[in-house]
Length: 88
Image (cartoon, rainbow, N blue to C red; front, side, top):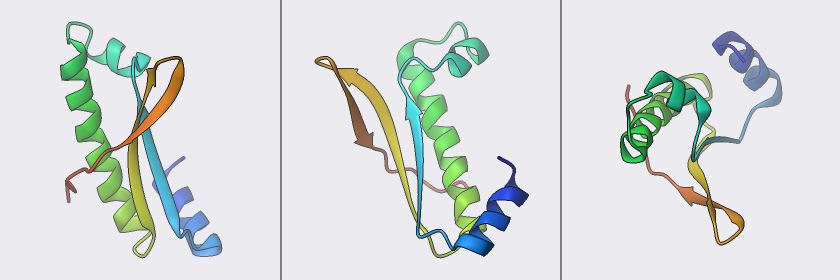
């Protein structure tokens, strides 16, 4: 989804909540940073989630924006809330 599409959707549907989710073992990050260990990949993901937050804040001024990390634990999928620093 492009920025202009998000802005258009928000204009017509007035988002009240936007949720960004990153996840454990993301293939994109493994291919982009093939020599990185899991902690480094997580740092890259959190940085990008901060950029996502900043962009969503610009596009959806009044919406609540939440960010999470999804990971497996004890046979279930868990969601941990991630507090990101806006990269604006």
